[in-house]
Length: 118
Length: 453
Image 1 (cartoon, chains in turn brown, yellow):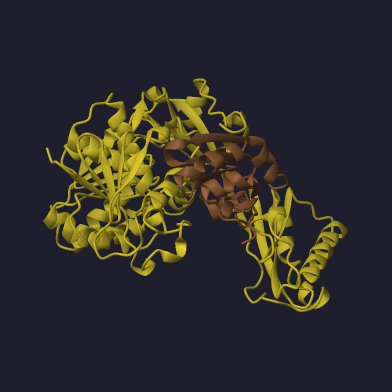
Image 2: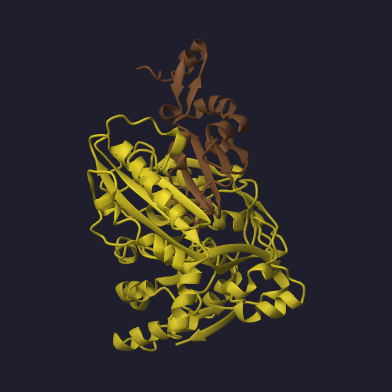
């Protein structure tokens, strides 16, 4: 089943220099393991391909049902150098939430996940 | 010892809601009002202001904030802690003392002024001693941009603030203190936490991180169930209610809007986060993976379980330097074929740059309304009603950027059709003040506390 990340998580992002951070938080604690397993470093790096010039770092915060990603080279130099509308990476959060996950039907049903089609 | 200490956040950045400080001291009991004014680039803006007028260089909003809370400070014992001093904490203190005289309360204010963070006058001496102040992101030594440096300030921690409180300050004015120390210091002072009570110090720092952006933890900018967040017009700014064991709750005054919930606090916890295992401050390294959150009442979140460890032997230094010029201009194109017209205008512009020999370090084109924030991830927009072409350039050469600002308006008559939205006139050329993060040995930075009244 296709599941939209925006239907099972919320997120906030910010900046440090030319790096954007995206913290993504499961809407329900029981959905955290799914997000943790699906949002691998490679998956997130390929999601942001074309938007960032550097690498990605990934951290787990099971206590907050959250993951934290650092996206390097995301802000055209960052801060005052940047020519971008989103110079401070404020909405990289919602850009991550555009991701659509493939979840086996049985697991999706067990977790009560909302389907992308509905 | 007080069983509970309440620290209220009244400003999350310079430019935050002017009404917030007063609402925080009048909406219910608070012991401390914490005002955070300094973002990464703020110090350089303040440095420029000080160069034009030596009495300036601090966050001038602070004077109005104190004016609005003066009764609570003078008559009800609310103490204020703010990093409003910027690059001129004593200039800030002068302005507050002048305000006190004007309001007839001279002698009733004791200011604790914290300095010692300003490394600009010592920069050459420090570099000669072998402090490279290398850029933390690129590794380049500061010598590559030394002649363009505008400001250099070390982030200092809780100790000088505690010293000022101990000497009776009812207003503490600092320069580049860490945002989080402004909250942790009064807790450490009131509860007598020692310099190696790592878990408690870490709790104070995390309390500071949660409230340092003001309403961003109490329903503001909250994506979680955002439509149901009540009464944002009347949003309550957050208050830390702490106990001596390092456990605290995030609350807001009764009758205010917004929402304090596990999701709203979680969003703020991950904001501007790096490695969650090691949130480094001058006082302690806090572990964000230890934080436990619990909804302990309506608009009340309990935070506990926090652990921390010893800090490093370095302080972070915030350096600002001149890095050329930039300008950003916009035009709006309407249906039909709005996107195609805007794209054609961009092509025309870039072709003219080439024809005229105009070269830039960077040219960034965005289509606001289509893909300016989500880039290639944005869904393809067909038949959109309008789009804003937004184009920016960057160059070390001011005249090149000036010339750019003359190239947009002609497109109204000599480019693609259905264009409007140029009433604001030519884009303005801005000098870029860039940020250079570095580290320095803690031993070379000595905070100084002076009491004034």
